[in-house]
Length: 157
Image (tube, rainbow, N blue to C red; front, side, top):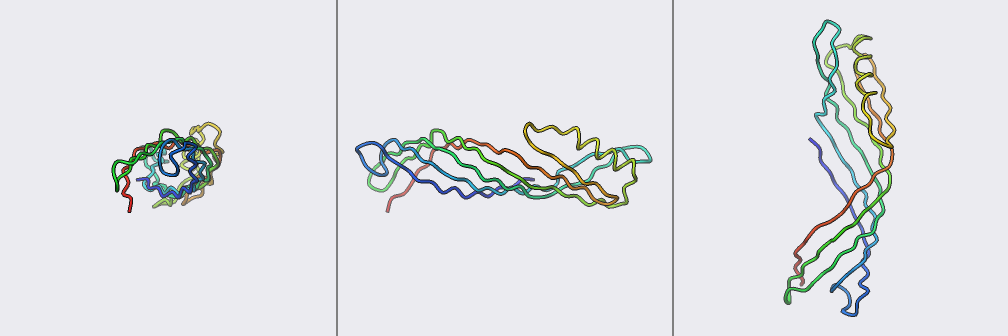
């Protein structure tokens, strides 16, 4: 399971003659996001044969900056339509995932986990791991990017 919370302050500039809240807009923004993951399984080969896994959980935080292009229309006295056409954003993120083993991991089991984690390849992301006889920790850091888009109905008071 993965959950997410984000705060995205933005400033909207309406270059047209209709004024604020009507027509095309350009909106520079910042996004501060936090992600939480649970139940992320890492499979490994057991010392006595067969396979097992360790469940990882942890948090990742990102800070990005972007530019949103959109348009807003009034649909009567109290309703508006907001079309967020496209809003690319770029920045950085970092975090860690940790798992505790229910039994003591042998040196071979630790090596199997290390090999599995070393085979994970995410472009431009720095991955490092720490594996002990009873835990696994995976650290991630690197660039973070995304795209905002959407359609919203609003109520004007």
